[in-house]
Amino acid sequence: MRLYLYTLAALSLASIGCAAVPNQVSESQLRYVKQYENQANIPVPAEMLLNNDAEPQLTEGFSDLYNGKNLEGWTPLGGHCTFEAKGDVILGTTVKGSPSTYLSTDKDDYADFIFTAEIKWEVNGNSGIMFRGQSRPGKDYDIVFGPQCEMEGTDLVRGWSGGIFGQSAGGWAYPLWLEAHQEVRNAIKPDGWNRVTIQAIGTNVKTWINGVPAANWETEEYTKGFFSLQVHSGKEGSIHFRNIKVKELDNATHTKDLFASGDFSEWTKVNGKPVSNGWSIEDGVVHRDGIKPGNIITRKHYKDFDLRFDWKIRVGGNSGVKYRTRGRLGLEYQILDDGVHKDKHLSAGIYALVPAAKNKPYNPGGQWNSGRIIAQGNHVEHWINGVKVAEAEIGSEDWFERFNSSKYKKHEGFGTWTGPILLQDHLDEAWFRNVQIREL
Image 1 (cartoon, rainbow, N blue to C red):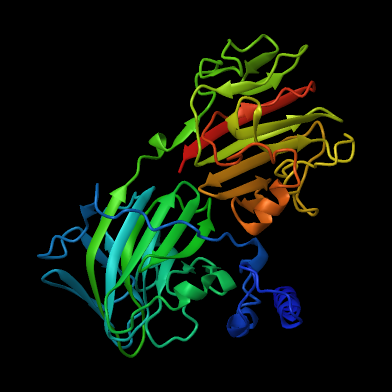
Image 2: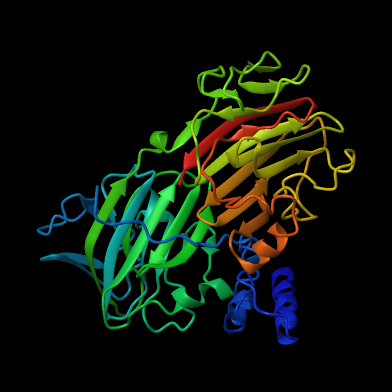
C-alpha cells in the first residue's frame, strides 16, 4: 500500500500541472503498481536507476553460443517443452502441461559479459533470457532460478520486455513502468526479429531492446552462472532464437584498486612531487594527517568511470574527492561531518552545484561511510551507503542554471574534463579505504 500511495501522490502532482519526471510511474502503468504492491522486494520508482547508455558495440570479440548444427553445449532444464536446432535458428515450443523450460548453457560461470540474441515469435508465448542463472534439484524437475531479461511476447500491453524478473527469486526486480521507459515499452516488433542485449559488469546489469535502453539494475546476489533460453509454460508458444552470442569481460581489467600497491606509487601531489609524509597507508587504510600534507592525485587521468570508496572524517571535519580535475579544480564529492562542520554544502552532494538528498543514509564524524561516483558522458551520480543521493546531467538547462550561479562559471568545460582523481587535504584528519575504480 505504501508504494501504491507513493505513486498516486506522484501522479497527482503531474495532474495539477507538474511536468512528468523520468522516475515517475506512467499513468498507464499504475495498475501494475497496485498488482505488485505486496511483492516484498518491488523497487520504489524514485530509487530506480535509469539506463541512459547507448547499446554496446556487438561486432568485435564475440563468440557464438549456438553452432548452427545441433544443441551441443546446451541442456534443457526445468520442464519438457522442446528445443530444436533448425539451421541458424533454435526453435523453442511450448508443450501443454509442461513447466517453463530453460535451454541452458553447460558452461555455468559466466560472470561479466555482453550477451546478445535475436528473438521472433511464430506463435506468441512468454519467453526470456536467464543470465547468471542457477539451478537446484526439485521434485520432478530441476528448478532454475536467478535473474531473467524478460521477453514477454507480443500480446501483453504493459511492454516490459527488457525488464528484469527474478525467476523463482523474488519476482520483479526491474519493471519497466516509469516515464523514462516509454520508448522501450514500444520497442518490440510483433512480426519481426527483436534484438535483446544484456551487459553485466560487477554488480551492475543493463539491458537494451532493439537498441533502446531498458533496465539498469544493481545486484550483489547473482555474480555468475549460466545463460538460458526460456519457453514459458502455457497452452501454446513457438519462439525462434538466433545470433546468440557472448563477449566475456575480464573483471580484473575493469576494476582497479587505486592503492593496490600498498603505497603511493600511483599518486603524486598536484604539483607532481611525491606524496608527503602527512599521508600514510596502514592495513589498507589511507590516512591524511599532519600539517598541510596537500592534495594528492592519481597519475592516471579518468573521465568516464565508476569509483567506489569508503571514507571517514574526524568529528567536525571536512574533505572531499574530486574528479575530472584540472589542478585543484574539478567536480567534488563532498565529505563532511554534517551539522557539526559549518559548511552548508553537506556530504555526498556535488559540491556547490547539487545538494544531496536530505533523507540520505549517513554516519557522522568518526564512523565509516561508503561512497560511489558514477561519471559517464554528461551524466554524474553520487551515492552514499548504497543509495543514490545526487545526480546531474551536464549541459542540461538545470545544469547551466546551477553552473552559472556557482563559483565555477568562469571555467569553460568544467565537469567535462579528463583528469586525475583527487583526495582533498582540507586541514582535517580523514581516512579512505577500498578505493576502486572501473572505467566505463
